[in-house]
Length: 253
Image (tube, rainbow, N blue to C red; front, side):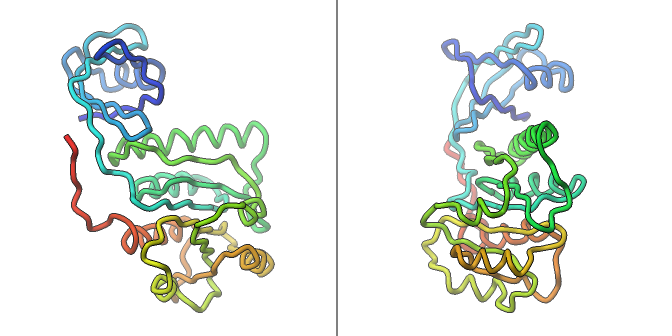
C-alpha cells in the first residue's frame, strides 16, 4: 500500500485533504482512483489508513478509516554530522541513514571539503536533501523523517553546547576501534552525535579541536572506508548495540 507524507493535514471531520506534490504524485504518477487504499503519515509519529474518496486538480480527499502509531522510530537518538561530499554521494548517505533510523543530519564544511556550496546553491541542495529523506521515510515505513540542518562549518558543530550526548568522531588514524569503544559506553546511553569527514578526512588540527570539545576519536577497523560508507556502517553498529535492531516489530493497529 502506498504511503504519503502530509506534514500539515487539512482535516474535515474524518476526511483529510491532500494538496501539493503528494496530490500530484497520486494523480499523475500512481493514477490512484476512488476507493484505492493509501496510508498517510504526519511526520509526528501518526499514520492514517484510508481510501481515496474524491479528486480535484492537485487535491485529493481521503476518508480515514483507522489511525496507527507504529513503532518504527529508533529508541535512540543518533545525530550524524557529515562532511559535504562530491556529486550524489550525499544523496546516498541521506537515503541510507534515514532507513537506518538517524534522527538528524548536520552537513558541514571542513578544511578538506571539496564542494563549496553557498547562497542559492546551498538552499537548492538543502531542499533536495529534505525531499530525499521524506521519500526514504515513505519507503522504509518511518513516521518521522529525520531533520536535515542547513550547511554549517565544522567549528559550530564541535562547539555545539548540548549535553547528554555521546560524541564520537571517526578518524582513520585512531588505533582504538569502535568495537572496543562500544564496550566502554554506558548501555543506558540513548543519544549519540558522531562526525564523519569528507573524502579527505579530518586534519590533525580538527581532531585535536574535537577532543578539546569532548569528542572521542574512533577507528572503524584495519580498512579505510569511503566517507559515504563510514556513516552508514557506524549507524548500523549503534543501532545493533543500543537501538532496536533484532527487536521484533510490533504494530499498534
